[in-house]
Every structure is written in C-alpha cells, then in structure tokens.
Length: 131
Image (tube, rainbow, N blue to C red; front, side):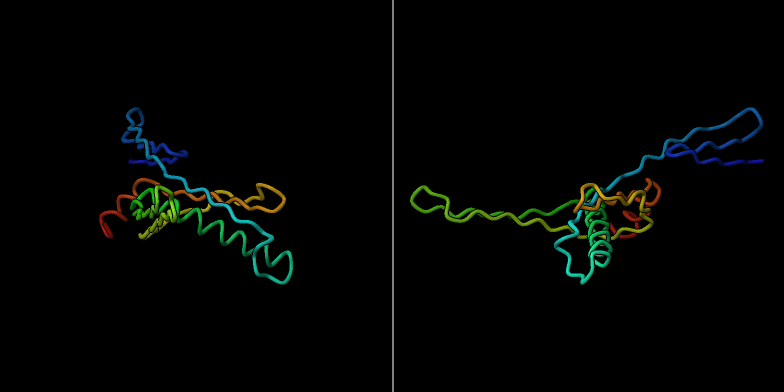
C-alpha cells in the first residue's frame, strides 16, 4: 500500500516495504514586524493584539512580494544640480492562500515579530490560478 509521510520540507512516499521516493518541497517564508506603542488601542493588550495583526500583514506582504513580484516607481527632481525631491513607490499586488503562521513573538519590548510560510505546491496553485 502507498504511504505518504511529511517531515518538515521532505515528503517520503513509500511505494512498497523496501522502495520509497523522497521529494523536497521548499517553502517560502515571510517575516513581519510591528511596534506595539504606536497602535491605536486603549489598553496595552489591545495595542499588542493590533501589533500582532499588523506584523502578520507585513509578513504576508513579504510572501506576496516573493510570489508575485513588486512594482517600483521612482522619480527624482533636480534643480540647479541639487536634488529637490526624490521619491520611490513600491506596489505589491497578489493573492496568498494557505499561508501558515509559524511563530508569533515579541522581538523587543515594543515590537512583535510574526513568521508565516507557504509550501511550493500552494505557490504553484496560486500562480496557476491567479498569475
């Protein structure tokens, strides 16, 4: 009987008691950060929850950037050989499905870090479905 075992990034497929196939399934990881003190909540606990949400969205944005790319637009205005205005805009657009939150923890006394990941099979499905 066919038996499938998943260990971290490896999938082991047993086709018989002595034969097996090992498949490496890489994952992409997104790491997000957010400060607690700048959140709009009334209590510290409310601010902490909002910081965790903001950090998770930051991590998901980084996954989106890795899968779908990033569009950069920039302009520089120079007058009399002096930079007057220098701007750079980054736009990220895409769909993320199946991302897992791996870790949520305070990275400093005022900052939360959230780590999310998504495996290759889900990335392939997203790219096929949404481009």
